[in-house]
Picture (tube, rainbow, N blue to C red):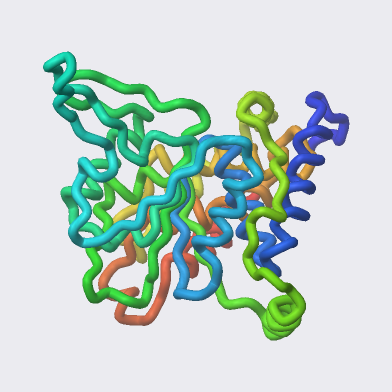
Length: 323
């Protein structure tokens, strides 16, 4: 596929990734693939939507990952009565100088965890549009830029729909990945019980050590951009996304933003695995989290009990893999 002579030294990045994984294993059992995809999103400078049933550590895994980065962390619990000003901030009148001052909301942080993003109505969800896409907040005609890094992790429960509001397509499209967390295996669950029984303080995040500084995280992001991708791999990505628009199984196909998401995600995954070039397997793996929230099944396929991952797999089977 490509000669194995590395043009970029990725040893520091790979070493940091291994340190993060070992830190996370102090508290979380399993979920290695989820951790790798979350790290890929951070290196690709993208936001992540984490979906899964309650009790499988969606919130915990995001908090742990944030703890390994030497950066500000903010958590926002979305509720039906949450207002846009509760997220972005509001202008407060200062009696001393008789002027309005902007008091920043919790979104002004580096790593933001939004718990149960689908619990708030459209008006509150819309407050995230500008800040997630342009990494800035405009209030009273003034623009406030977000500090780097700026990554949003959002969780949602796919089962419970009472009291929830479906995320609009424009909002969902702002997430680089949608990661689906599943139940642990039987062996992993036994290990969870045994470790829980042995620990004096379960889920104590103080045992975790910081691995990344803001500076070396930005340096790693620059390295990701220099990861090599051959023209035939880029064409492979474009063909996969094009197939989502022409297949009769999907009501809505993916946009060019999805192609870019797959490309930068595949670059990040390659770097995490110590390669400075992308191979088709990287593309195949990233296609699922990059596409599953950007396509919509036809009503017929929904009635047949199909899901988006199954259709993505069919498309991957159909598209010729470059040699």
